Length: 225
Image 1: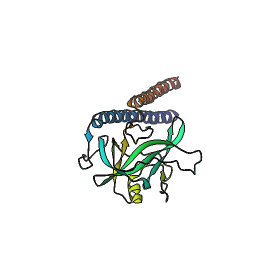
Image 2 (image 1 turned 60 degrees about the vertical axis):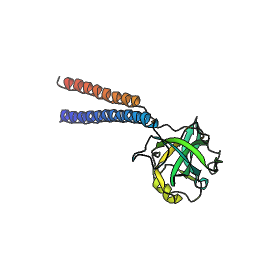
Image 3 (image 1 turned 90 degrees about the vertical axis):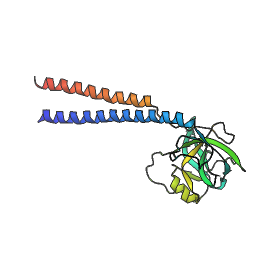
Image 4 (image 1 turned 120 degrees about the vertical axis):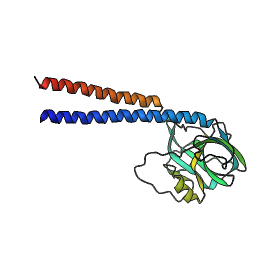
């Protein structure tokens, strides 16, 4: 019974390690596909909301319109060189449609209850950027939106923000180009972990599975003696 229990436990551990390795391999392949799509799509520029394809993610977009500064959004927990801050987002109206635009990072005040001085850019503007899905960070619990503007949020739930603003926001975010005159400090990157790291993690899981297989074989051989 002891040998059978040991074998079953070892098989369960091996299956888990192999699954983890295969999952990391699939994640690496997803990142490679994303990187290729980013490179190709970011080189394609669109100049109106109406001209966008059904899946506009990662395409470049240039618009003329105006910001709505009274409905600013501050994406919380954004670090830059070890300093806490926010990403500043404003709704932008163009082509009779509304888009949430991420201007970039600004530093947080020394005290949590304080709100930073937000940049404002009035009148008709020309902005360019890359269309990206809204950020999705780990939340321990769902936090309702506040009642005061600017809104300080942990995640960009476009549907909730659209309802709160009473504006028909597009279900994505325009990440402004770093060289745009209205851009703040840019810290956003589309791929946080590259495919190489996922491949490295996969190798680690497979090596652990190989090591456990060797140890299990050694123990089973000795237990016969």
